[in-house]
Image 1 (cartoon, rainbow, N blue to C red):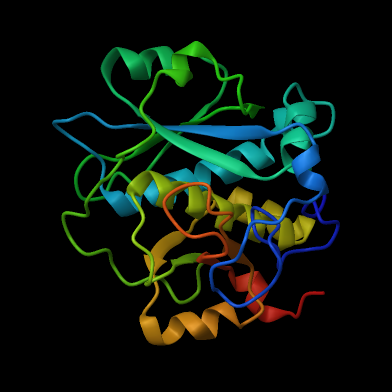
Image 2: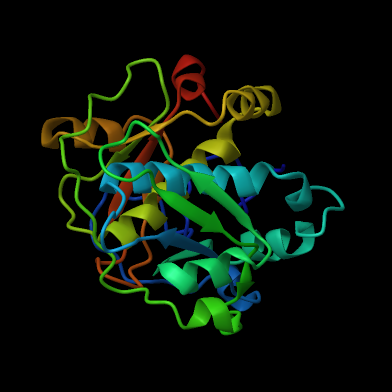
Length: 261
């Protein structure tokens, strides 16, 4: 897979905002706004009686994005390759919706990939189904009717410390995001890390099953992370938070070892 849509590796946000400190910015139109706009749908399975733990859902959503990016159907002449290219040529949008019962079964029948979270996670292991990108105003009816707002989850127990030698998607300690919003942002962070890795590094991560952790950074470390040169997600501000807000820093062992352009 090629680098990100700016034609250079990393250091770009999912919405291609200027590279500035993490403060609110006015949304600026770019050439990417003129391209056909697509969105990557993710649906999280949430049954009332056994909802997944929040952190497990965030990590599963991030892995689902990586699975979609690396799937053979998304690459080369695969059946999803063209729509994946169109999606990445425009603004990189992801929308998380929730489903249960018959809604989940209908969504699962559509072409896509279901990714399951950690069996050891507190509560029910998360299930997230990711679908090929769809036009912004052209969602399949089975997905269009699913709820997008108010998706929130809790962690029954505090998540374990992030592994020092693993990939970590660090969430901003300054932003209050719903679980659905945070899942989309974690997916953005995973995608930025994927773009910046070499082909060998990507294959190694994929072969290992895309191990990663999603954790909220400490306030004191957040400024260090956002100025470290690691990929930073800056939100366009379409929902919940101010435009230009830094939401996620994508940290991967391979990105720490060698300087990137």
